[in-house]
Image (cartoon, rainbow, N blue to C red; front, top):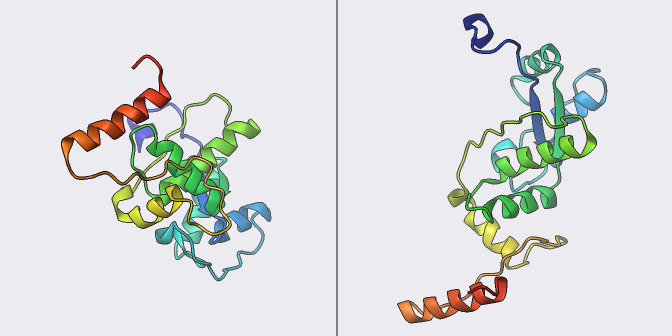
Amino acid sequence: MCKKLGVVDRIPRLVCAQVANANPLYLHYKSGWKDFKPITANTTFASAIQIGDPVSIDRAVFALKNTNGTVGEATEEELMDAMARADSTGMFICPHTGVALTALSKLRKTGIMGLLIGLVVSTAHGLKFTDSKVDYHSKEIKNMECRFANPPVQVKADFGSVMDVLRKYLLSKNSKF
């Protein structure tokens, strides 16, 4: 519709991302679009996309083929690292957005995306996933390095105590303070 209205001169390339624990579209893409095989999805932090037999697989494949699209995937550790990195910039993203950011990063690293502009659609907020975020930053997720962990700090509920912790943190990060 945007092309028909003249808003864009070409249809953008569609990129889909799936989590490795639930990746039937990714496997279908990697097979060269051979016969689609549903899978049994394993548990993932990205629970809303924990789907092994997508209802709209035909529409997804059609859209990807017609835009010269590609499909990427993210492991549990990659999506959690992406969440932590994004959160460190002031965002507070969901695991599903961590999957999309991981796919974007991989496409840039492999040169598939190059310097083109990419848009990542975030469909949920990190507040729905605080348990996994606390576990990540506390380094309590089994078999996960949690490379970008920012460990929680217990602080008494008074202004002076909070300011003391902030001052200590800021001084250790930047000597200008």
